[in-house]
Image 1: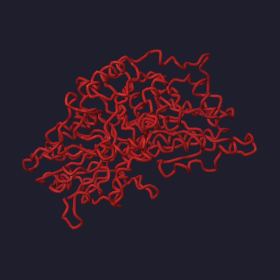
Image 2: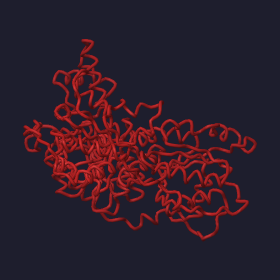
Image 3: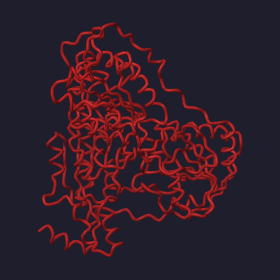
Image 4: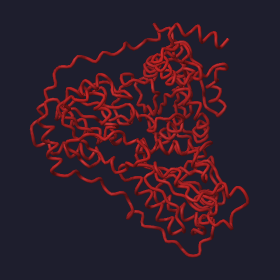
Length: 599
């Protein structure tokens, strides 16, 4: 995809000259540059006006470049999407306590997704004598970090410029040390704006970098290698691993050496090729019946930081059933705390490798390389029974499987990053053959982050041949719709496909379950869920912010030509949005009730 060269000149300041730092915020901005932070996404605020000035009039709005967002949640979500592609942090800046509260859901997403980022905040003058009437009081908190302390790796409010330098170094080091996560710093407005009384020397950045991943304990590694080498039915649960191609290849080689089957997860980025014969069963957001059957058959399981290993095993086994030997490779327990249950259940493990999963896979492959291939003798498996994929020529309406297969056809085999998928997505709809083919979900299981994360991922892919695509629900789209302006403004090519069922449909399913349990009318499940009367013009919302938009597409035969137009627009460097009306799966008995209620 071409990069619009004018994009970098959109907000180029004038009259910039190279001068030594003169204010506290100049020093803070310099450290951000020295840490190689490429972008800072922000929604403006007076509390960090000093830092804003330094980024513009001291650094020239270049490395880091500011990305103006229309909501703090979008700013943090963009940093999250960037980290999912690159594995490196960018920064998001939020205004005082109010901006931090706006951005807190996105910070929680990054925390649950173990994504590195720097979140920078500010507060009105801590010295009450220097506060303006009214506004500085309500935008000043005694302990602002308390708002997010339970779901960041570390937070601080430094009391001097020198302390701010060390805080930035520590925040960056901790964010980039596994398990990764967001860190939060709050800068007092007075520290930012006061003239420097003395020179603050720049830090030696190379002396404050994250340590190399630790190697697993030798005895534990030997025990794990012995168990896997002797296993008759080894199974690998490929969880939160890196985006590196070398790590991807190592997992393939390890599985092939062992003859191990592999399961993957749609909540997290691609971890193993789904077209490989050793990929055991199509992935889902939750353990699938086919995956659970393989877990029950396995005699040794290797978990590479699998999300909710305990819950997955509980779903597969009866309470008293004998379970296989479990090897857990993870450092995730190092960030567990008592506020959030994002750590899931306590996973049983016979052997624990306290190391990052990529390191564990490499070490296990090396330990096994001197021995013959594994003893695995998985019995011949019957193909997993999957529903037939629909064709536009025979379909009477559009559903998510038809949307997926038609989109794949329109892409003509192009390299694609599926940055986001809706809850109704299924693992068999999209083959994965590269670690960037799928980026998983948001981490926190909320709604509204899809567009921001898609833009951050697309920013990281800008200038490459890989096409960024996000398939999101209409509820997610409307909560985050104003994020589109940032993508259009900064010329970040992106294809957004809205699977529009005009409903918060996940909760319709819940309402139906409750109604059935209580023997009440399921026909009423849609009330309080449907976004109709009037129908929202999603394409109009996108066009209003400068995107190229199509739809609503309602006929199956219109899907592929519309997708091809949208893809061509993205290849020209545009942001394209396609509103696709998808079937909600209503029972015929519900149609009359819905019609009566909306007349």
